[in-house]
Length: 522
Image 1 (spheres, rainbow, N blue to C red):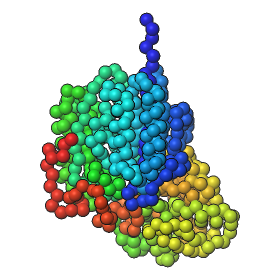
Image 2: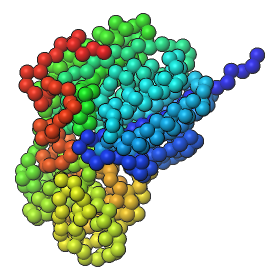
Image 3: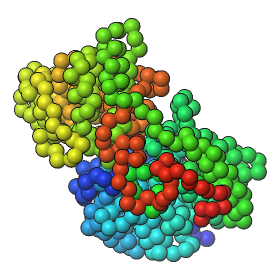
Image 4: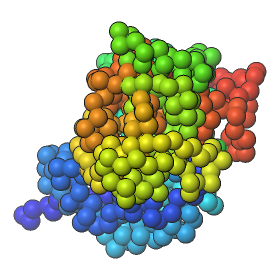
């Protein structure tokens, strides 16, 4: 008897978090981050320091470990959070994915590495469009498993197209590899004949980003409590074997789409629909009971400045971390607003590190001047964004780097990072790290590559919303993290934006919002 050939598994991905208020993303934004086609996807996944985030490496490693298989990689496109993707670029991706799937037929299964908060300049649901296209090409019976960032905005098309829906469980995102491994396990189960059903409930809640922490040590974690409940229930005897996955998706407000809203997706085995529906409703009901807790609580800039001044003047006080949550490149922020830096500099704050500021012209000027040179550090000379105002101060070029660094902790751990020509500038009491590739300051390595000692700093300002917590937790406990209220494209104060497409009424923007467990079941 001829031996059955190994299953042919297609791998493809589209991962970008799109802020409707930020400049459009181009193909160059993907190429500078991750644009991998065919065998390059597998080569990157199997290398020690991949450029891709962890889901695909985790998926490939788990498939390799669980039996023979034949990967059929097509296109993996990932970019830093940005504005809507130019439609021409997304249309090109769709052509590559479609042609690759058609060329690879017949396939035994498909794995899609998604984010779920994408936009194009012409579409509000490119993620759903892409998955629907995959389903159309491969047909109704080929297993399709997809992983999603927990900031995904969920549409009916996204849920209906897949067999198993797998969302991150941790924020900061420290479980990407594990979710890729989980996806591989579901692919293997579906290949053995498992059939599934999905329950989808969306709540009229748009959680501000700072209310979506999941760590047990978070001060307030209404979102984390929903995830905890789902994971407890999936381990209950009544659910074991019946429920394959529970995903609670917080969403990404700044996409400003009709599909925004805190969502629950439960994947159950075929025949166990009632169990999946009951569990989804229980989790959604908990989220609704927590609705008043989904409101941002930030520290005013003048108060934060006074705190930084105090710890700089008194070494006996615990050092503090000041995340600039409103200018988070991990949410489409430009990574170059000056409000905190300027306030701290004017106040004479001492012992402070600030990073990372995206400013290629300033980084180039520092490299041209050389280490030890005195320069006038002119920030944002080439920036036209309304929030990115110019600021200038005398500075000494303390250190230079080509920006090549391997992530050490948190979301970027083990990842090959390329920040472009970079510099550490001493402004007198404040040392600023300037880079040429926009990304959030989520890893201590971005300071350490210049020899800067985070443990010796009295205060640290990071351009990040929450992922820095997974990298800087060895330096700062939650009670020493001060989320600062300043202007920016990712301000958690949602009333400051002019929304065009959000479903209304919605918490926390509107009063008198009503909901019942049966109301929004999909």
